[in-house]
Image (tube, rainbow, N blue to C red):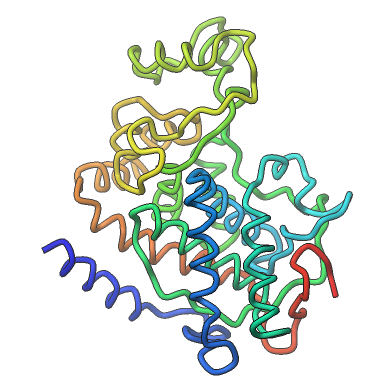
Length: 318
């Protein structure tokens, strides 16, 4: 029954409309092994460190939210995007570089770094027991990467209104917001982004009242007052390495780690969506909606045709 459900999920996702500049199986003739190479690379890295899955997903999200999905976040350099404050803890660059090296050996100058990142994000979810979808490809790599342009990323202390504004600016709606935040089911954060909720929320000297008391005790044990702000905390206490709907159950129950995540329960419209996913424990509805939202995200302001370039090394412009 589960296999049949996943089959129908795949069929439905394949039928979704995508950006007309992109197409599935773009590399069918020019580099037929492209997607297999990316997947095997992601799998080998996840075997060594399963936390890389969330890193790849976040890397793709951060890429698309600044100048579109053009691989600009991969560029190295003092003034590049990856050195912006909001990007200092991004991970997964080595996975993309590894896949690119293999692809250049097999199909030199064909597969863009932006496409590798989009494919790797999909594979990271799939290999974490999440959905698999057909990624539209054909993106070109951007020629600009500036840390000064990293100003539109959602922040862990954003209100729902601010989150909605930032998503709307990228053509994403409230449903996309809640669905994509569900990626936190396999994520982690540092105590620095949590502690202010635990000990002195809004300068009250008290904790955030929306935190479930029993969960507050758990968080305080993980992030002691005055402790190491870089210590990692799972964003989903129930399934750090497995993609599923328990994240939404935690939001419903006051067990969200980030303030921005817990705020989704305090807004009538986003609460309705959280509740829908939390009540669908098998996760098939969320799997389909997440795949759909990821396709939408991955087509934001893409460069194609003769725009941009196909980088030889993902961290350097040609």
